[in-house]
Length: 386
Image 1 (spheres, rainbow, N blue to C red):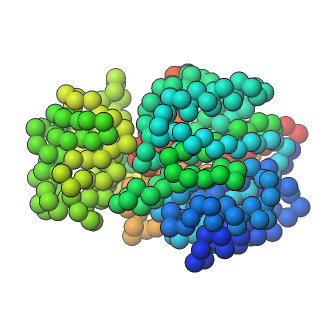
Image 2: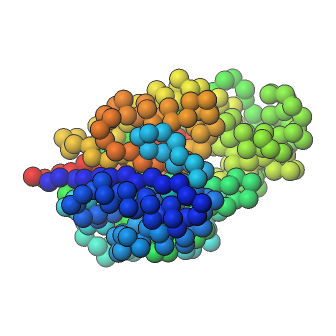
């Protein structure tokens, strides 16, 4: 069985024209293949309904899922103010759904997904994109059963200052929701992920945290702690550009024997860190710093993991979902993380993706799915069967 993939990329003043051009390109490259699923990565500067209008005018009822990002990614590198469409064609079935209530309750959204899964055949995979600014991804993960099915997802990003982001599924879109696709048939999915941030010796105690706001470290406002470490005043850390560059310096918190990465979305005016995962009071945290070399190595490791999971299936398409911190880190070498992935999977494999505010990956050894910050995730698709 052959699995085909094609990529369309377009930049235009409005979302409808970008969507239309991206769909036209992708369909032309697909040739005689009939698209069975489309992944959309669109600039947060577009209106989602305009993007979908342009796409569906050519694609009709093809199942689509997508998300907003400050920049998209293809094998040619980084694309700003654009729409990227990846189409897959092969012997498989896909269904896409829009679940609008994710921001109100990750737990209920997870329950909805599992009810939908139970009504379908076994042997399916689940891919999804959820709101990165609103909603509780850890609550969502904890409400999913362990080992339910192969699944992976990411949190949409956009304008960090305003929290503007959106998700798209079928012909619906908006903020605060989750876009999901169930896939089944002669299709194999391999997932790999890694990051290039390491502890540098600075240790803090989380002394006050409320919801998604990390207020104090070592009894002082979080911005004061960073001001002492990196220079500039605490006030400067609460305003651009430092208030969002804080994501380059996440913290590692102990969870059992593991050190998990938790990253600020931005620094608030009161000096607290706005996170998208809760952090418990009283635990120790460690400053993490990333490097270009370490991240390029991590991208190669993630791609290798994904290929190993693919087994004998030949890779036909790779979806790369990268934390927005990588865009900041690679500003002088935009798209270098994609080049590292291509070294492993081969330059002939089409790639699409974008920058996110977190990734959701399968649990380890049959455990619950896990919410990650700061990682690069590679999802490789290959065909099975004759």
